[in-house]
Length: 322
Image 1 (cartoon, one colour):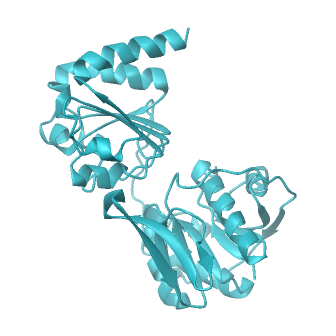
Image 2 (cartoon, one colour):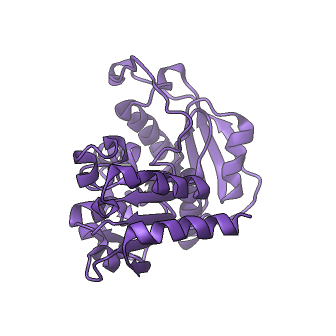
């Protein structure tokens, strides 16, 4: 009756997100007095699968099937559901990213399981099973009681530390029956971005708002991002004005991100924007308005003109990197 965790891979490689999930699952398993079983779907080499054992997974079930090359939420749900029932798993953990948000509701119906979505801490209680999550764009917190026998938790990204727990995980190759009629997703074209850090993958994000005053002022922001190995982002008004690409727009109607560090330059912090970045581990805000809502979400703040502060930040980072 192990805790089951679905570990997504990208082109056969795991990212920090996967290790965070296994670390969290290990914490839940200790509370329940059981072990962690990780599920990997797709072609992943054993050397890569073994890495999951460094964070608490005791068993790793590898499902490699040509029908599952393309991520299809219905097919993946069927696989995870079958494994969960075979393993008699009562707690299933998935990331709260786009994949998890697609799979968790389907899995909930199949397993008649309650869902705690966007959870950011280990369960507060086991009886009743109570999880903790942020709500209202991070302005409030909720304690959610899951009463079903099977429980599904989707973990908010960057909400739990990656914890080393080296061990000899056992890798098992698993064959499952794939109903071809479930696979509806067809990939017609793949375009990969190169030479730039993906916003959703970045550990550090440097973002600008209207306080940047003009698209001509962006080179300094891009320079700071480059020095920090960060991705660049912007608020919706900036992308609407055409100053920056819509691909960089973060917020409720843009990309939802959770980097370790989010630096907001000249962003006031409208509710819609905070909804997209509130899961960041640390937020640094720079704004001329001391009452700007962004300061309520930020751990560190500078009241000042972004155009005056930014050059000093660039100079300071350059000095540190000497």
